[in-house]
Length: 279
Length: 168
Image (cartoon, rainbow over all chains, first blue to last red; front, side, top):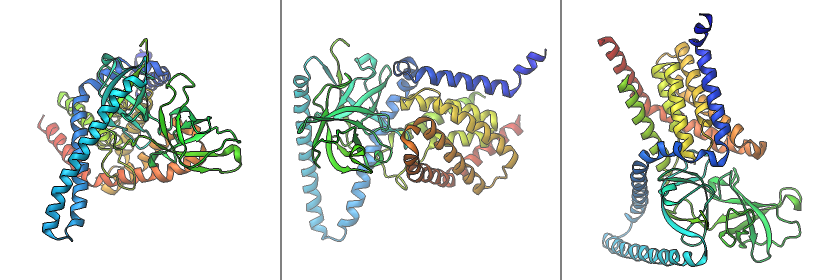
């Protein structure tokens, strides 16, 4: 009877719930365990709405830019404004077509560049939910062949990141600027290697950090950084970014480079998943 | 009860969509508000500790799945947030908007410090100082500001609840 009364106490339920959540954290912090059906239960019904909201947010962004431009243009002559607007529309349409053409050409080339890998295209339908993460949700999941730890790239061969969670129809991509991301990289000019890592002080600017650079390494601003292929997650030769500037807080051992990623994660709307042979 | 569950399902779904889809829009002070904290605060303010705790777990679990991280990490923080806020609300709540803004400000700081300490503390104290200055405090401030337009909605919801109870 006393035991029954104990079960009815709030403290018992608080302890049970806390324990269950702690067990869940322990189990799902192992990479492979957090994908699958749990993700699918929530992400499948949400995906179409997220896609619609994402398109809406893109349209709103365009409207914001338009409003800002329009405010400045009021100073100019009305007829010139009309002419410019017509030209702008024409140019942006041509730009769009050129970009689309370039992306499609590059997408076709991708298949040749990564022999053995199956390349599938995906659209971004949502972005990082808080101010800490740098993640993207894409509209491809396990039913399309996507899986945890698969590399994700842009049409221009730029490294986006890797899949960290895969549901039935959608997946979460951890970008290279995220604090939890680590990519072993190489500077092709000097063949020096380093660790490309997301950094809390750089993530908001869209940059990441290259550390573990050998003291004798020759490093210059503008140097290209590519994946080295070490670790097995990413194939070698994927363009990660360029050296933006070099910092040396204390001694040569603490030297690191700030990397400007090849991909602008705020602007990108389409990515490609590299499915390794055998998956 | 069914209406309340349906309301929360729609509310959580709507907030998650907003939170994950509007990253392209300009944020205030370089951060975006954390509406996920809002659901828990809203539930605790209008329904008490139990409702706050349950809303915290559900919202946190959805958020965990959407972020691709360990499932339960945010749920645990929001569960305790809901419980504590519901309890404090019972003791202190006097329908004062500035008191609620202070609650939201404090809760946001505690919640984000938890996220940093258990999620990213490997980055060290220097990074924590940066995170506090550039993420945690601005976000807490922005969250508190969002109480201004959202508070009338919670008052209306609470009023409707009282009416429903009175009618029964």
